[in-house]
Image (cartoon, rainbow, N blue to C red; front, side):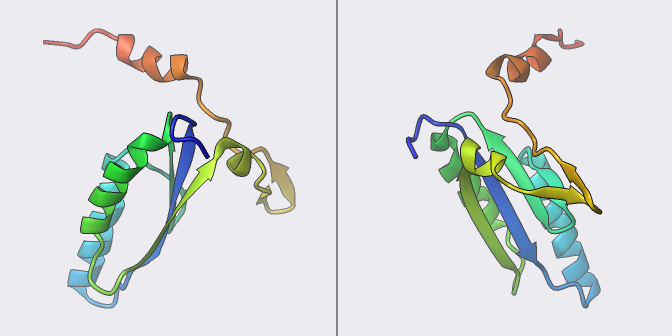
Length: 116
């Protein structure tokens, strides 16, 4: 995988939630993922599309520092082809994997004027 190629970053985790402190820490980690631009795939699985692999390292660093005590976290980097090759089902119905984003689609959201 070339560093200039787009990638998907997949984060999977099991976090302890037996105590009130642990539940708050787990919620804070989920919010960290959302604030970093991740989308929830399943309850403990989040994904993010990056337009090139050079952006992975800083994201991993931020996520690593936020892992709650005794939390088990896996972070996997996938190419577009690997992501597209997944098999996705809802019940018995086959669903298409998320498609890679066109760079123009990403910037379209930034064209909206900001309110003062």
